Amino acid sequence: MRPADVADPGLADAGRLRIEWSDRQMPVLADIRQRFERERPLEGWRISACLHVTAETANLMRTLAAGGADAVLCSSNPLSTQDDVAASLVTHFDIPTYAIKGEDRDSYYAHIAAALDHRPQVTMDDGADLVNELHTRRQELLDEVVGGTEETTTGVIRLRAMAKAGKLAYPIVAVNEALTKHLFDNRYGTGQSAIDGILRATNILFAGSTVVVGGYGWVGRGIATRAHGMGASVVVVEVDPIRALEAAMDGFRVMTAAEAARLGDVFISGTGNLNVWGRHHFPEMRDGAILANAGHFNDEFELGALEEQAQSSREVRPFTREYLMPDGRRIYVLADGRLVNLGAAEGHPAMVMDMSFANQALGLEWLREHLDELEPRVYGIPEGIDREVARLKLESMGVHIEPMTPEQKAYSESYESGT
Image 1 (cartoon, rainbow, N blue to C red):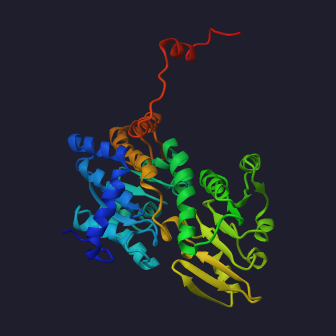
Image 2: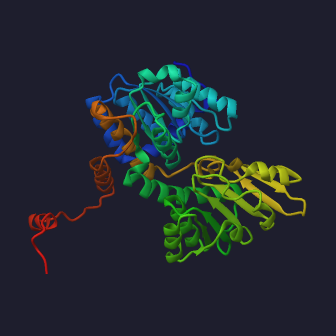
C-alpha cells in the first residue's frame, strides 16, 4: 500500500458503503467513468488533488484512476474530511489520501506538501491553497506542471488575481464557471447543505426566526430561498447594487451589515470575502445569535475580534462554540467559522455533485486535448462540455426536452424575418 495519512484505517468498510451509496446518485459521473475505463484519456498523468474528502469526491478520484491517472488526494479544508471515506480510498481503491477531520493548520499544510511530493503534472484545487503552495514554497516543481482545474468561486478569484499579476505559471480550467456547476452546486447544493449543517449543529427552528444572508451570489440566493421556504424572515446584506436590487425584487429585505446585526437570529455568510460581520457588529447582536459560514475560508467573520471581546468561550454542542460577552449575551459560532455544510454535516447532496465532478473529469480530458493551445491563465469550461453534462443529467432523470424543428433552427439563425 502506498503512503497515506488517515485517521483510522479501520473505518474503511463503513467508508466504502458511503461511497457506494453516493455513486448510485451520480449516474453522469458513473457513465463518464465507464468510458474512461475503455479510452484511458488521462493515461500516465500524475494528478495532485486538494478537494473536500467526501464520498462524492471519492467517486471523482475513482473516475480519474479509471481514466489512467496516477492521483493522490489531500483535503482542502481542515473540517471537511469524512474519515471513513479517506480510509476507504486508501484501503479499497489504493488512492493515497492525506486528510484527517479536525487536523490543525500544521497538519493541513503537511498534507498539501505530501500531495505535492507526488510531483504533479496536473493540479486539482478547491480554494487554490495547493496552487498557492506550489507557486510560493514548491517552485522547483512548476516545470513539470502542465495544467490544472479549480472548483470554487474563491479559488477562481485567487487564480485570476495571480494571472493578472503575471504569477500564474500554467493554465487552469475554472470548473466553477460551468453553468451546470454554479447554477446548481452553488445554489441548490449549498442552499440545502448549509441549512442542513446549521440544523445538525444547533437543532434550532427556522420558522419565525430572522435569518441574515451575507451575499446574494448563487450561494446566497440558494440559502435565502431555502431559509424563506422554512418560514424564516430573510434579510440580505450586499455590496453590489445589482444583486441587492435583485434580492429586494425577490421579496427580501436588504440592508447594511450594521443594521442587520441588530435584527438577526442566524447570520449565514457566503461572500468569499472577509469580515462580513466583525468587531463593530458583535456588540450589537442579540443574545443567542448564531454565526455560520457557507463561504470557503473562515475569514467571513472576524473571529479574532470576537475572541478579544468575549469573556470566555466553550463548546456547548459538537461544532457549536459559545462566546460569553461581558454583558451576559451569548454568541454562537458553528464549525469554527469554517464551511458549515462540510464541518457540521456531509456537504452537498451527491445528485448535485454529480454535475460538478462530471465537469471536473471532462475538463481534465479537454485540458489534455488542448494543452498546446493554452496560455498560463484561467479558462472557463467550454460550452459544449457544459451542455453535454446537462444533457446527460436530464437523461439520467428520465427528462426529455423538445428538439427544434429544421424550420425553427433556421429561423433562430437567420435575420431576414421581421414584422
